[in-house]
Image (cartoon, rainbow, N blue to C red):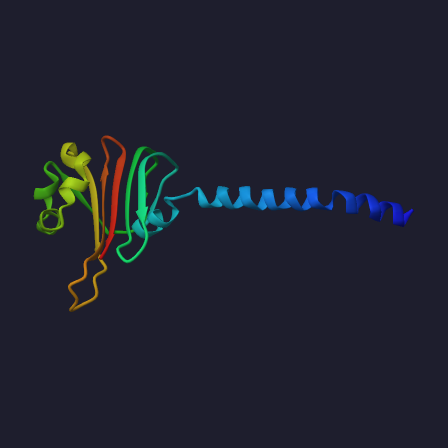
Length: 154
């Protein structure tokens, strides 16, 4: 009886291996389909649900990430790195105004022109004494429940 069982299992071995490989592939796609996990950790925020309007990530020497989220529910900041603003975003803080002008962020963040209330986040990751620009900037619009995010590395 054992010989017959081994023969039958041997017959189905390729199909079992294929099904197992397919399961691993689909499971890895499921885990990889969470593009905002790293960005949420960087910003120190939690979001219950949202709609990913745009997500672009370039790899290579100049790796950049741009993200636009909409219909955010239950946005919570876990750090004090966010600065509130009201009214004109570029006038809310000299640092933000300088960043937007010198690095061309106003063009990238075209949707924030109508933002009246919200928070902004800026983190400079550039090495001291270097001409490289490495920074993260984000804007959360509390009225529209939208988040704009840019990670720039030169």
